[in-house]
Image (cartoon, rainbow, N blue to C red; front, side):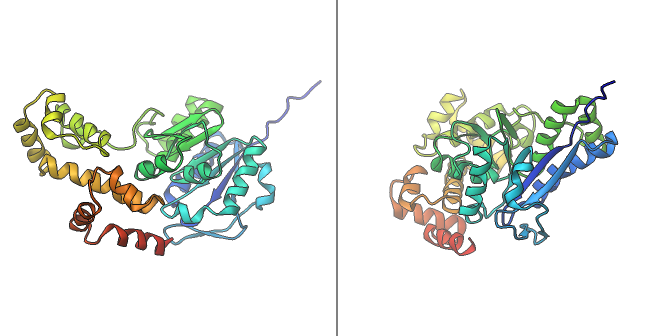
Length: 324
């Protein structure tokens, strides 16, 4: 008589970067813990890894010690890298070397929060679609043109599993658990965590405009989407109003009533926030950022930036460099 082979638990490796997001890491790892608890079986096991085998401090100050040496990462069936707000400074040669070794062995790779930056920096996302926290999208698209970054909550593209931050890792892990062990288990985990709805890969990260200002304001959402898509060459407000088939006066009333702002001021703030993302999260020269955000001169850009944030773009870049 041949006994059925006992399946080994899926081994999940978490590479924690300096200042990683604890909420992203906790949401991911606890899904696997709950899968074991509910099923009463060891479906999963997990290890914490760091690129230098030293403890990693999260952005909230808590320290995680590695449980698996980096040289043993090949034992993992899938490896996720977890980043945070300082991902650029935390992604060093040790991190890139570790991720490239995993990619060379064809180990499936994933990323939590800003971990996609580390994968992209290691060349492990070229030709893939992937997700990253919305705050990093503008800057990272400029830096890695071979990677298709998108605004979804999570993305699965072949052997790459990426998601944004916050609670998005929970949605990704639930999806993986459902694919491997069935919808019933994923549903039971959701009930334990009091999660009313499992978000799908196609869900966008940021809350759609109508949900923020009330139902029936499609024009407002369309206007903001047009503005966000035309940062480098800002459109005249009349042209935007014509595109959504309302008058300029109606457009101004919508912004005043629901966003307490004039359309021109909102558009300017949108461009300045994009500039701030690029200053903080990329190494793009300030003059290039000036052009990319629709400003005709560096003096105009500097004056507008100072008016909104209280200091010039050059000071923002220096502050970011000092933190990193």
